[in-house]
Length: 121
Image (cartoon, rainbow, N blue to C red; front, side, top):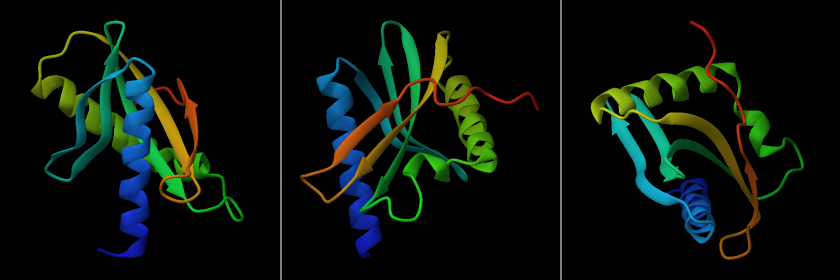
């Protein structure tokens, strides 16, 4: 596996651990349907939380959350809609971003709740 893929997996692992430590229940990780993917799907307080994880070794060039542009938001929202329909979920939905900056085992985690809202298509 390429080094950047290993870093990304370690960041997702750290994000999932962070969520669990903060009372979230992980429903799915790296859920896929056709070309759609969700990094982490969690629940807390009867709310479905869709989490996009962005991992970087440093922030010299860009903040990790800035990589979630409008095209990425649209892709996440479409994937979330497919997930909700697939599992017949009737709950409010929140879209979060978790950033993991640093090296495996020593990430600085930032949890951005309500990071974006679904755009009107």
